[in-house]
Image (cartoon, rainbow over all chains, first blue to last red; front, side):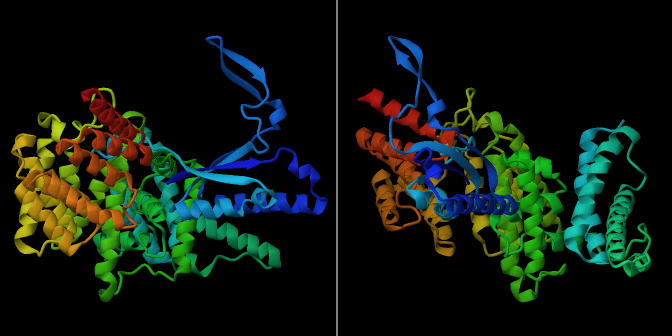
Length: 121
Length: 417
């Protein structure tokens, strides 16, 4: 079963960390990525640039309009994702629980990825 | 030029035989498996252009053995350089018999031993599937990765790790002990059925290429049935696969939507597969006490023999489900049993049976429970409750075709009000 682990955090929070904490955080991320590569669970993942570089498209006066800035003006922003293929939802949640952003006030969302196959009913 | 299909069939047939011989001779399942995979890839590029060699199996064995000894030599050379001693040929290369000398061991047994090894209980289901497809099925890592919609590197790593796990678990290239054999065989059957379903549920739309898995699962189960003709459950699983696969052309509509059994165009069912499946299960049931796969195959056979959905012998199907629920109790069996009971005794009785599943944590809130409940509520003449249950099921599924089907059902009921 494939899951997308959505990473939510406060943009720029790493800037406020001590050098030591920052090194530890990136080290933990590398560690998890290495483990997921070795277990054959990693399907993909991307980190997103700072939300200040976002452009949002939405309908205005019946036409799509492009504006600067993110869709939601919230404290936490969508910062990136991991896609994993694991044997249980518990395992997906366990990976998310180890993601270091959580310790610094961020949040991870674990969401199943839709499959194109299906059984007739 | 040789037909690609012929080459592929040859490779898949010989892959487990060559691997078995190699492992018997050299041990080291992990490395032998890599060497056979390389030999298969070499054959897949050379044979279609240069023609199939006179003895394809000996060719594969020679190439795989060469890969293996090359690797040993270079490794030994590296080691020797490091310790600055003179290069010498490793002892096992000297004692290895020539590649074309074939031992008297029956290849058939090797395929079975390999199946047991790849479906080792130390492995998770996804690893058992991947390893079985590669080592026994002779599929390439790229093919397996494509079928599972993951990057090739991910699949390659998954297979490597599975082999390490088997080694760490101390597994040997031997048949399981008699006391374990029965249980290990159940695992093999479960893995084969898993491969079948991965292919079958995907055999439409953009995932059509995954239908290869269905064909491969049937082929491997057929091989297993050939090796163990006296095992009723192996026969039952093969029959179940054939009878299910027979619906392939009818289960998906023109625009990719799932068509439920009752609405399928039965003229599009595969009559050859049905005939073979029915014959297999009918025969198996005469001499073995029925196991779960045989009962499921028997149910599929009753469906297959009904000329129209309305003429289905639901009484017999309900009886078979009752038996199945007794020998292999499982909430998914109860779900299907509820449908059969509804068809025999009316939707209220079916709904009553479902009530027990709300308390079962394996099914409470499961989309399949909501979908069956929706169907029975619709039969019971409660369109509002049915519609709510269809929508709950649509929210719960992670399958897009199922979601489309369930939303369509809900929308149809909204239109009726």
